[in-house]
Image (cartoon, rainbow, N blue to C red; front, side, top):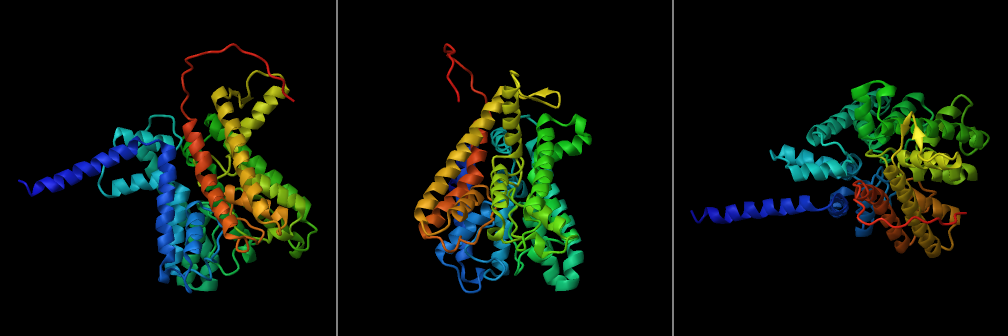
Length: 456
């Protein structure tokens, strides 16, 4: 009898720890989970067989942070410096960061034969930004199945172009890795020259951009589309996300073609019939996808500013993308329009946006601006010899988890690289954690007298 007591006590202690962990708020769990995976990834990248010539501890830490936050910035070239093992670690990490820590936590629990209690379901539901008390287990399974289906489908299509050129083994590996990287908005390429040689190829462009646009819509929107099948029956959130994504993509595409059509270093280097394909890639890739298809340092200033704006917006809520989110941007625009037209509340698609959503949207935008500008301010101070535009772009790219760079990442000081890592971490965790903390309305116990404040 006594021989069973230590085991029983161990099980009770483990269950008690799990119950205490589920009691933590979703922001705390999210930040802690990211920190743990960064530590694990750092140790794995530091192993001698993870790279050809060995990564320093600092390089391993930077690579792990960039991978888990689905940011393409890196001090090591995944194509040249990392071995197959290192590339697999990168892919696992950006899957965890892209699909969500809670998704992988639930899948792990289910794979081990465990069950998720009511407390765990509540935490997962809040972490996935779900307000309805539906079956979160079913939602997690749908997310995993959707990701696997789209990645395999995208890989199969890419293989038709890359297997004949690279052979079966290398072609299939390249196809699956890039399909997974695209869907998770990681922007990591293991091709020696990246996707630049194929950016104007219609097949590659359609598949890669289609994957990261779908991944950037958000699982809530995709699930809504699957259930309803008609635009008119979708929720207001889904309509705003779809409309915002379409408007941003098309308008950015037209502007990039207008800005860069005569630039000999970007679009003008191609034949006229190929330029719209490259322009499309340049227009949609900044919103968190981050694949380097052109050298952004030689693009014209309007294109660079437009790219920074798109990076800041990012993709959809509860998606593989980052940024302040398309729905947040749309709510701010609608609220501004309502104020300018003298309306009491913002409306769209014959629906009224709740005041709680308006307050949350403005809060996310203001705090995100403060965080990214503080990071950029410190970078400019620490890198006085670098061009301010290059440094600002690096800060926006890190915060938006876009992974795009003007070629200064490796040349920055360790202090600046540390700030970039903090921006990547805050950019992935901060807006999400902020949205989670603002998700539940709090009752007003004391109401003060209303007064006017002069604005403008």
